[in-house]
Image: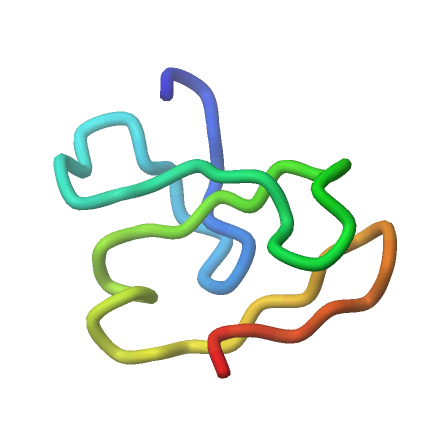
Length: 56
């Protein structure tokens, strides 16, 4: 996860053990990067490819 930034908070996730990276649940083509803070607080993200907004 080195050099990655959270899509919701724009913060680096290098030392964030609770951060996750996964494929967009709708299109599966784009990488979604979420910090533990964004996950814990359910901060929304938008897929840059298809416009999917999560979490639901």
